[in-house]
Image (cartoon, rainbow, N blue to C red; front, side, top):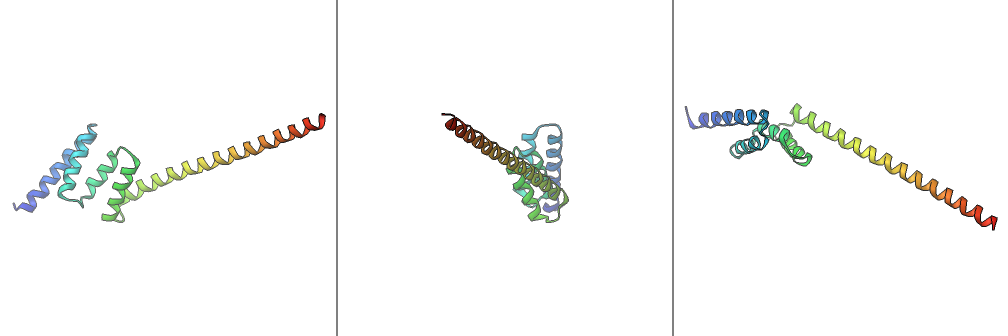
Length: 125
């Protein structure tokens, strides 16, 4: 076995260990293992995908998934997960916009009601 085969087997073993750690709930250990894989092979798509699945926040998750797409532009897992994240952002933005519109309408109505009350009170004096 040459050193290239040894390196690949080592990465495969590390990937298996990382996957088993992740599935056992040991996320931090799994992250470290996947990062070790990437320190040897920065183009290891599966390691990037696993890091994305273990990310603590959406910023890191998006960064990892975008890295996958740079390496594998049609990767279905990365495309699907990014689309899901984009839909969630769009829903949040739409909800925020609706709430903003409702608040503006309430403020306008309040100004109209208060203004009308002031006009009525000044005429009664």
